[in-house]
Image (cartoon, rainbow, N blue to C red; front, side, top):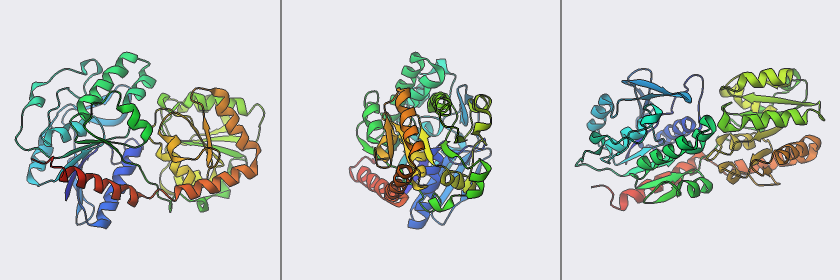
Length: 412
């Protein structure tokens, strides 16, 4: 089986690696170990090919007409679809299946090369142009390959959080449908997300593609007492991710302000960057550590050196960081809306909070602040739970999906 995997997220961009990039990188490692033929198509600062192993290559294509979304500049996109060099390269190989991870530049290229008809122009164009029919993207093509689309980002909710506009959110939902309805199967990262996207995506078939976690690098043994002393030997409340509106950072900040009125022995550590980073530093002063995005050992040590992981987002389709926190031995506090609730156990590895209820979020974090024994026990249980989520198992299941799609006769 030769797989063409299209993603707009592979390398760190602007010092940021998102969850999709982590999945893509783990996928290349898995395919290399298993001897699976995998070609990753992605954006890059230049056109180049990276050979990962004998069976795995990553092909990067410089955008012909680069562009950034005004409300999401973490990813570089391309107004030129299909990318001529990508199309030329794709024709040189013989693929059995195509898989894309986002309804954006590479997703549009994936749909085109698979022989499907993208009847709406992708959201890489200025926002008011979403939904315009483009004739050349409706051109009939002879070759048709099986097409899998995985849904990793709740873009309609994401758009609403960043723009405050129901109109834009609705149009983005329409755009998502125009992409994913072309797929032979649509994979969501959680049951919650699958149930939600069924409301606006007219898909042929739906399934799950759960993530894994590297329990070797994310490990309680990475705890760094020197780092803890540097932060005053306080109880560290930890967050990792973008410091942007869709992550509900304002709620996290307000909760910490409320908690420190009673508890002077707490410190907030946020590993991430975004438009809200400076306001956190300004409003919380010496009570917050906000170094920006961390990578490698720095990130692993930061996770393991904390005491509580607080994740207020209600837009995440899974929340890979929630698994990483539990692998690091941290109890987690998450919302009952979104995918993260499916990768933790309420009152065993942490607490589920009622979405939108400020007092519930504060109360559950406070319970862990004041109860050292409960915090340690939940951390141990969290580690045991995380050990069930291996990347090999996640990708083994993905291979079975590919085989089923191909065997069902979608290839013509």
